[in-house]
Length: 136
Image (cartoon, rainbow, N blue to C red; front, side, top):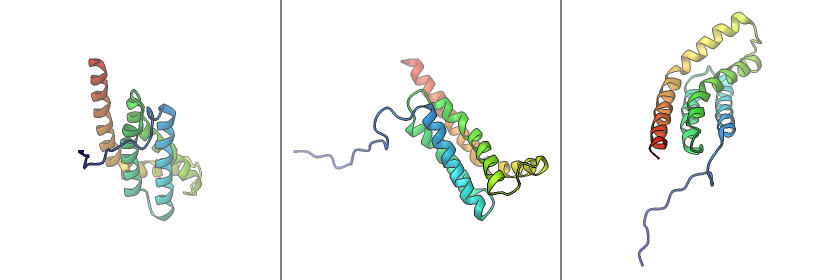
């Protein structure tokens, strides 16, 4: 009787994985919640950046085959929409064009390294998956 000593790892989601709308919602809610929490106490930066990176990696891990393009494209768009929501509600700036432009640029610059590194990882995974599917 031989037993396996290492536990078998399984995905958190049973079945084929999340579809495109599920990935979009997952990434948007994760980024929005982290950004709102961080913006309430300080300025946006490290926590939101880590949430963006987790959203890229979470979409790769939890998504179905064929959803890697959505996973690569969605987090910057989700960050834009969540930033506009946070600035209009918690930020208290409203939608003044001069204030929105300046705040949007400063918030984007604070998470730019996280967006770039996540995008590089996600696009590399997308092209690797496409190459794998093309061989089949």
